[in-house]
Image 1 (cartoon, rainbow, N blue to C red):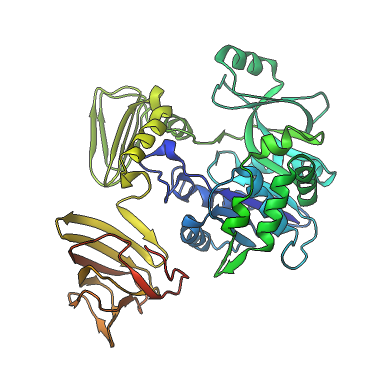
Image 2 (tube, rainbow, N blue to C red):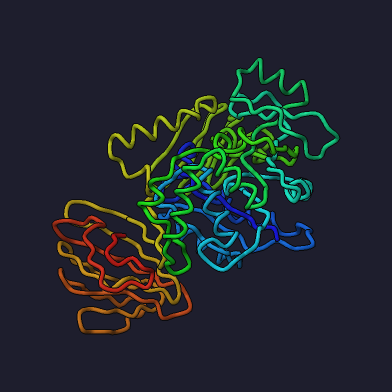
Length: 479
């Protein structure tokens, strides 16, 4: 059985302001109709293996858990497990915990599946070429090899590490050398030789093969991940890795911990229109532009502009005489940068963090397991939000010590709990929740419930929440 392992733990800060810590790029629709996570799952459909493709194991940050689960539900994908990391420890531990779960450690025996490890934030235009490479890699993995997929380079890229292949007929070649990011002259020499590939970060191997090499070359990672899986707790649809045991795990990439150490590594060339979408310029290259090489998304007007990536999410973006620039508009931030400086967006995000700005982690519209809220306006002692509650969803039973709330139903039907009262509100009806009163909103209907919430009080922070009941397992948490 082929078991996909989907790594969805990144934060994608180089695509700020669209990608943020609590809503990173793999959960966004950047290329294609689905999100990058959903597109990653979709390209598994049609892989023709006799034993078939099993349910995926998804590894993600625990702060993204409800978004990940909802996106799987939207495309009707049932996971074998969704593993929640309390904090990132790089790819070697992430693959290790997935391999342990897929092989049955801590649960029912699953045998020794072949794992296909895929980051959730890659673009692949030619799905058939990708699937052909997977089949070639599967044959090598069955024989005990640790397979990496090397991207056939079409230009001298200095932002990637390279893999040098050994001799042989293919399609799986022995790995002769892993090479760090080169300068441009060296990268050109690599491309001209035909023996070097970009390191894609995609892998395939038997669970036992990876765990065996991890034990040999990075035993501390193996021990910490084994302890974490044995101590893991099941929470709704999730498997929570414990903070103490997983915190003891060294942070290292699968390349450094295993692939550069093992003698069993092979590389399968992949020429499938691949991109890791690591910057705004890379995203510009991944999407076909207009006759002036402008990529325009949303409400955009470009006059005498060329070579630009222009995106609007909530209002008109207009440019005149702009060349080779990126302009990204969201509800609460606008980025303007030359394309040759987009790698420095990460420096901008670091500066925002130093200033304590929320824009590094949250959008104005915040997603919750029950739906979302959008902070429309705020000022001294007041805040206005638009709540969207999904059909059948329920906010927690809670109270606030410092604020009162006024609710107006815009559309749909709300079931309101206020103290000991339970009643329905229809469109254009409203109610008031005084400070200190237990309260809850439920959507008993079959269409989304839209509510305008006006908060007033001395303190309006999200941490002024005392939860008494919560169907999503968030008692004692804020948000």
